[in-house]
Amino acid sequence: MNDDKTGRCLCGAVTVTVRGRLGPVSYCHCTQCRRQTGLYYATTNATVADVEITGHDRIASYRASPDAERTFCRDCGSALYWKADGATKISLMAGLFANPTGLEGGYHIYCADKGDFYEINDGLPQYAASSS
Image 1 (cartoon, one colour):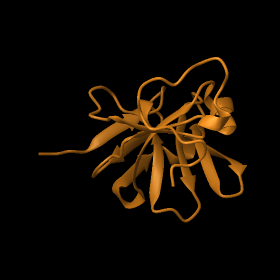
Image 2 (cartoon, rainbow, N blue to C red):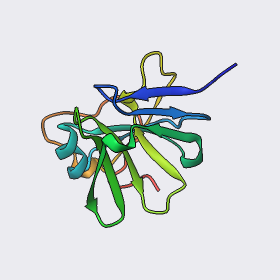
Image 3 (tube, rainbow, N blue to C red):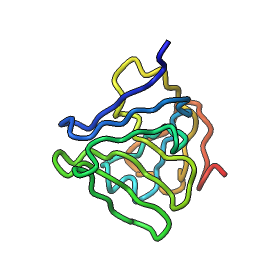
Image 4 (cartoon, one colour):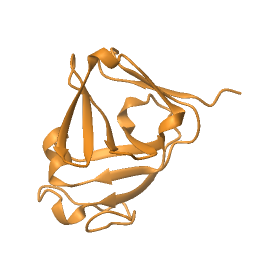
């Protein structure tokens, strides 16, 4: 049985295929994530070696901090992933994958920075900063 998960940006110019396990969904409420997406980042993670990305020429990146890159599709603007320099894991936007995803909520991070216009009340663990 093939357990690959394939996702794509809104216009389909970029696809992401993951061979292997996807992690639980992490909800990041930091100021950078809120400014990029309008609310919060909802990501799942995978081992970099298990991820194949097509459409590299359509991907743009932005370094909002000196330690990581954020990427998005040049054509439709869809946020794609966040990756820390030298990391063995990549945080992929959970919304890239079509239903049913099999993903489950894991935890919320950077809750101290969350917007004042919503509440977090799903019962998942909440961390003021990173979960590590």
